[in-house]
Length: 157
Image 1 (cartoon, rainbow, N blue to C red):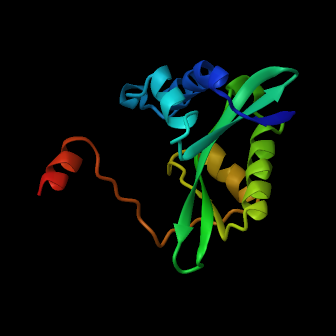
Image 2 (cartoon, rainbow, N blue to C red; image 1 turned 60 degrees about the horizontal axis):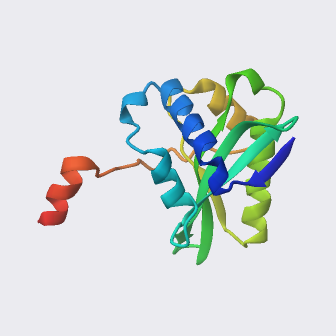
Image 3 (cartoon, rainbow, N blue to C red; image 1 turned 60 degrees about the vertical axis):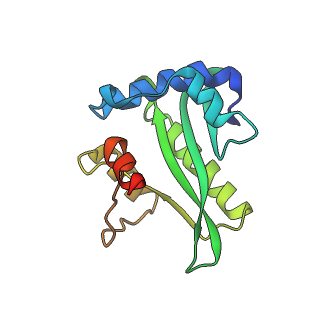
């Protein structure tokens, strides 16, 4: 198992994984990004998010996208995992655990106070995995989102 920082050359692979993940989450129609968007948002000087590639026997089998956020209560950055995906054929070989451990080590090295992510409430295999590695659900918080027309309307006042 090899975990490495992704490069712009990996944009097509990442975009393919994004579409596979969206299909798994029954939301393929929600993917608006293009491969060029992935290049522009992950591999430019202005990029605030980063990506990792997980390889097994030289083949890319998964990825993770993450960024750093901030906690005023802790007075420290946190690491937020946006996406974690391993191809179905390679689940169970330790790829997800390797990606998560890589990110946990990065969070510790960067003196982060938290390592957080979200999971769909119906994704029981992921929930089981996260509980297995010792993660605790934060059920006291609810996620809210402004997007699309609602975002534009609110921004306009």
